[in-house]
Image 1 (cartoon, rainbow, N blue to C red):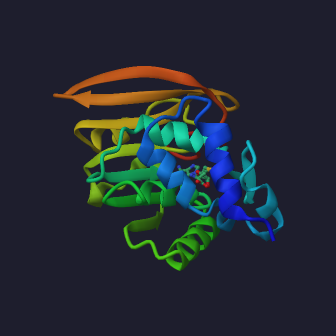
Image 2 (cartoon, protein in one colour):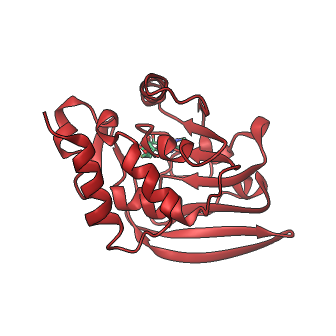
Length: 214
Ligand code: SAH
């Protein structure tokens, strides 16, 4: 069996640090979370490779660098309540759970949500809540959130998500056309909205109202 801890450390040292991920807490979290658990047995040996991996239902777990870059862009300090749209495998939720107070994650495909919940419970995470729902509508009952991360590509920034941010909060979301997007940061400062384009990226589509048609 592969030495997954060794592979995980190499992933951080060879894929994340040389490309500029600096936040020590993010690097630490990514050295810890067992990514191979989230990809299904057949893909475990490739889990720490420099690429996205299929997780079934036509969806993917993002490339490690993308998870690191998005997590760093959230600028997390430890006490945040974070909403994730697009639970997928649950890997990004686990990385976030290492770094913040509580993760609320929304997934539209029941089978993925059920599997992610099972894996995360098995790993002992107690600060992650998962709901099957259209995440473009956020999670009103638990709002506002200090941070929101959308891990699927959106045609536009859903206004509801911006509404569900705290003052001083930030949203990281891939925005663009169906097959390529620009990772975008939205900051809410005393009622004003500031948008910054970070870098190009490719995500599976965000489906539903305020997203793409399924
Ligand atoms: N963060 C995930 C990767 C997500 S892939 C991980 O770490 O594995 C994108 C996910 O977004 C898919 O699982 C897809 O089903 C989900 N998705 C797409 N549109 C959605 C919507 N409107 N609401 C909730 N989830 C959505």
